[in-house]
Image (tube, rainbow, N blue to C red):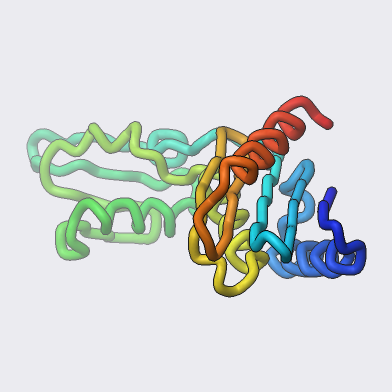
Length: 186
């Protein structure tokens, strides 16, 4: 972790704040590295965080068996992994009303019509979930009042430039420098 600031005490304080927020959100083991630049004279906060690799996204067909019963014109879903049942229901409720989903027992769901297209529906995306948690941490870390934010995130790096003024090119360059360094393991 690197916190750059001309004020050594200010850098220490921000390092403590970042560590505390990461501890509160249980993010320490999910992050490879972090670089931050703070300059109170030029109100700017640049933050770049490299995420650790996550497991692959989980599709519907990975955790449930779907079969279309033509005679009844229903799609029967048998949940193979109960841990994903809340995610399955959340995804289904986003697509159908709760009244359209019949659940005769804990592991079985039924929906009218041929819904075999659901097989490829993403049920859980650990990468997205981690990214969302890191954004949550970033918004807790940013100084209050820094409402102008430029998101410069890439695949495995979440990076933002925040200020209460117009964003300067030098700050964007600083963020790009951090992104390059994190991509190259520096």
